[in-house]
Structures are given as C-alpha cells and as structure tokens.
Amino acid sequence: MEVCIVKPDRIFFKEEAEELLLPTSTGYIGVLKEHAPLVTGLDNGVLAVRQGTSWKILALLGGFGVIKEDRVNILCRDVEDAAEINVEEAERRVAEARTGMEKAESRKIYIENQLTFDREQARIEAHTMWKNSAGGPPTFGG
Image 1 (cartoon, helix red, strand yellow):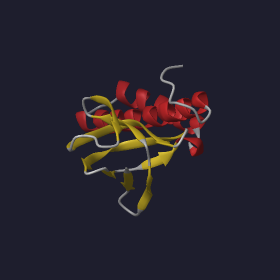
Image 2 (cartoon, rainbow, N blue to C red):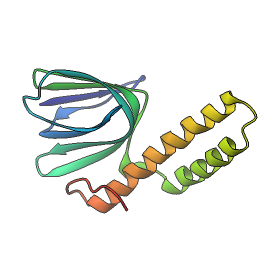
Image 3 (cartoon, rainbow, N blue to C red):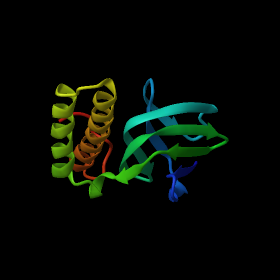
Image 4 (cartoon, rainbow, N blue to C red):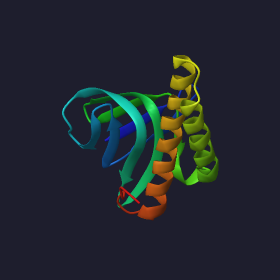
C-alpha cells in the first residue's frame, strides 16, 4: 500500500509499506494491505511503518488519517523520525511542562503546558521504541 505523510510545510514520507501502526484518538490500530476504508483522528504517539522486514519508527503529533483503496494519507501537525529525537531535551521539556501545570495560574496556561507535556511524552515514547526495537517489530514499554 502507498503511505503518504504530509506535514504543514511539506511531504514528509511517500513510499510503499506493508504495515502501519497508527495512534488514533481511540487507541492504536494496525493497517495492512486491503484495509477497509477509514477516516480517523490521530493522536500524539508512535507511528510505525513496516517496509519489508524493517520498521521505521516516527513520533506523530496529531492529525487525521484516511485509508482508502490501498492508500493511506496522513495529514499531521508534525512528525519526526524517532532516531533523530533529542530525548534529553524532550525529558527537560516534560519536566518543565509538569511544573507549569502544577503552578498554572489560569486554565489557558495549564492547557498549554499539558499540550507540551503530551507532545514531548509522545516523542520520548517513539525514541524509546526505536531504541528498543533495533529495526525489528515495535516494542511497547520500557
């Protein structure tokens, strides 16, 4: 199936793939060739793409997915290759966002920090999965 991942500024990825793991708003779903047509909201999380026997692990930061006729189009706010994530920086931002939520003086400030927290947690999860999978199937947890 053809997979096309589009960020606001460019096409990030457009290649053939055998399998996808998508972080939807209701949980993760797997997508194989000839999947039933589907439109779904995508959450912050890990997007895994299998090409042949190797997996590409990405941090997806929300958007929409459309599956139709052996083609998957993903329109997202942002996406990043897990191998390129600076995990120390992401962990620092998580800590800052957690403190910001605890000390928030308004709902707006709390929500801004919560969005940062969720985004950076997704980046850390993607990096951890990439590191633990070593090019093999995605490995959830620790």
